[in-house]
Length: 313
Image (cartoon, rainbow, N blue to C red; front, side):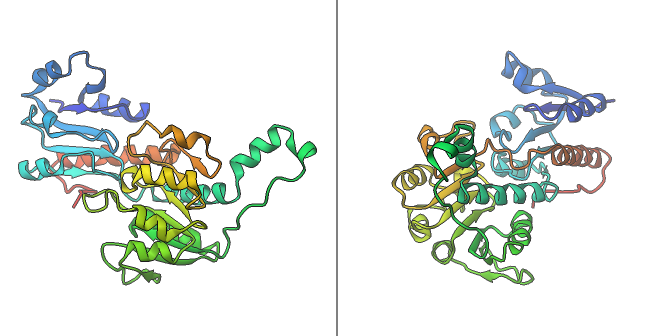
């Protein structure tokens, strides 16, 4: 007999096709009456599949007492009620590591884009300004600068490897020192920001990290510093960041994530010192397929009483 799953939001068509050919899947986001759907499947549903942005709240899980696993398509699990899951003994899995390279690539791309003004240069060229206005204003070099990484997990490590190719001095701030990293550990995020030209945010969103990049950290980064965020928008005090970018209190920012996605502060649209992406750092076919496979493999392991591949600790 097929296991019944609740799918909170759309995934890749190929992954949803495999899910729906293997399990009895109910699409929560398409239900005209979501409470009625939960009531209908309450006695049968044994698993929830969601993505890192949507997650699943306790109000949903409370209606599904038979759920024995929550499988997350993504690394971040801050949108999942982990306290409820822990109390109910519901394991949560995610998809770490398989997206680290693409996210690190995006962090580099954002740093280059905002420093070398690639978006503005493209607009300058397309508008025909080169023949009429001459060369565009000079930009900032990335090579040889000082990089600080907030969060030395798998993404942070992949990013550091790439930054080495730019001959950058690398420091990091993390909950604890990584003895095998080979980089300078700085326990204070503010002190880290004060000592670097680029502050890369790759930390997990936890209650302790929300709003960590605040006014004091941005003051420490200073008017010549750049902020690159490929983690979660909630790790940054977004209104303060917008203000600092508008007032030139930091040199610029490359942002893939925002506090209230998919909403982006409109004030950012008019600024030349910020490059924006729609939370797309892991958005390659290769990575999304690998993430989906890991979701499927975790479900298969659970339902065959095998150890989970990537349980959230």
